[in-house]
Length: 440
Ligand SMILES: C[S@@+](CC[C@H](N)C(=O)[O-])C[C@H]1O[C@@H](n2cnc3c(N)ncnc32)[C@H](O)[C@@H]1O
Image (tube, rainbow, N blue to C red; front, side):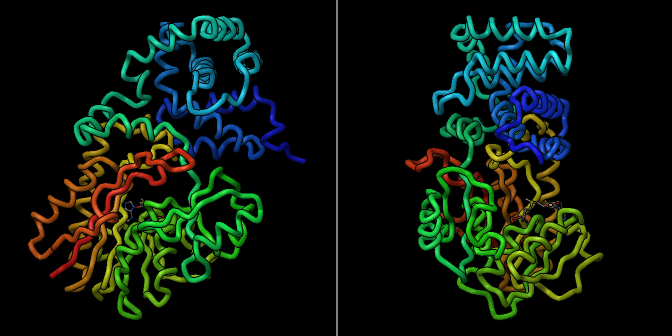
């Protein structure tokens, strides 16, 4: 029988998390790294790696104070994870006592790099003895204070002079788990009651995302009633604004709709929940990711025409019939969903934003001629950077005289992941940008 995450010894999880964090520092994606972790250790490893990556800047600044010469990568990864987990957190009580963490980190060190065990022990114990002073010193550097690379902090300052600190803080909090209730099968309020009867606390979000349900605490999808039958899907509330913008007051029956960057299919499925009679083409450049669209549609009992192609190369996949509506959920920096992907900030480079903005512009230019006169195109990115949002849209409007932009309050423009008085305290929405264009 495989071990449950709860029963996995902490030193093994710390060791796996150390490899994952070190892998991210070397430029690999956390999703890929976690896929290689043995299945029984994966949930526990993910929890530790997420927590450590949200504090990686603080941990690095502290390790530099304690050991200015970086130890070998296997030891450094372990030290950084342990320091991040020992970091005082005003928002929540620590999952492990200081003593347990140090003890288990030293145990892990003995197994990964035996000669380093005394060094790891000495560094961590010194951190505990001098924690207040070391934390205060780390907080004096931007990396230690904000847990984002300096260029990212500068970019946010430029784009959001009044909100940049709140945005950085929100990125370092664990996000809520949000569901989308199938609009034709149930309501958010009814589903909240159904969850309550199973002892799962949740609330309906309301406002522009009437099908969104926010759980107080994440649960495995297998615990969600009706999940396997397609009654609910996991999707952030900000992502739930795309499909209503595309459908508007209702497209004509059988309208031709293109979901140009569809995988893994969250918005594709939502479109069909809102209007099942659409003739929907779901396109994605990544054939493997496109397979996940098929899985999602199957669970929900829906169908669409799936095509693996680069949306910019229209000659390779388009049949020449114009679309009544297009959703362009473009590839982007993912700067709006950092709390769900805590590795992203450490992996991106400043040049990536310029390159991504270029691809977004090419996608807009290539897809625009495919839209029928009077049709609507929704441009979306899960980014808070203006270059991928409003600035991108403004530049497109300059290039395309037959494009007109519409503001829909609460839906279009930059949606920032900022805390309101929400319970749980994490901001209820991811960061997103939506632009609604029509073709005259
Ligand atoms: C933000 S994700 C889409 C998320 C999806 N709409 C959903 O809601 O589940 C962007 C997607 O664009 C795809 N992509 C990137 N470049 C593309 C291109 N040139 N043509 C088509 N798809 C592309 C990526 O493979 C990725 O799956």
